[in-house]
Length: 121
Image 1 (tube, helix red, strand yellow):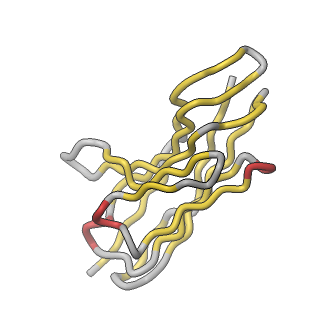
Image 2 (cartoon, one colour):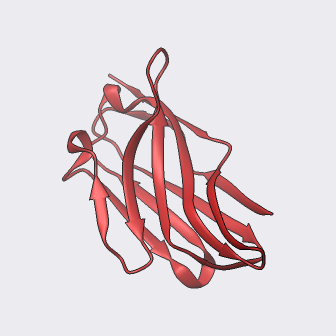
Image 3 (cartoon, helix red, strand yellow):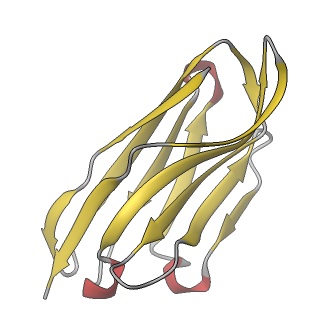
């Protein structure tokens, strides 16, 4: 069993910064891709950013140049540095482990519990 625990959300004014963290635990050998998604009220969950085990990254157009995803493979941790935050970034942010190699083999799509980010104007 793999568990993801996210943290770091909160309330910030527009233009401010927050850093989200997510730690994966369990019988993990490696995690192929880690990502952050978000879901605003009344909207579908969307990909914010993702990073492979080799360090390749992918960002939603709406956050390019403002958000930076990184990971620490030794700690099975993924981070999301969010700068120049806008009110439209307000959402619940979820971390995701897309493909995990565990003692049971390949496992897919584990999610963290979500952390609220609120940006005031």
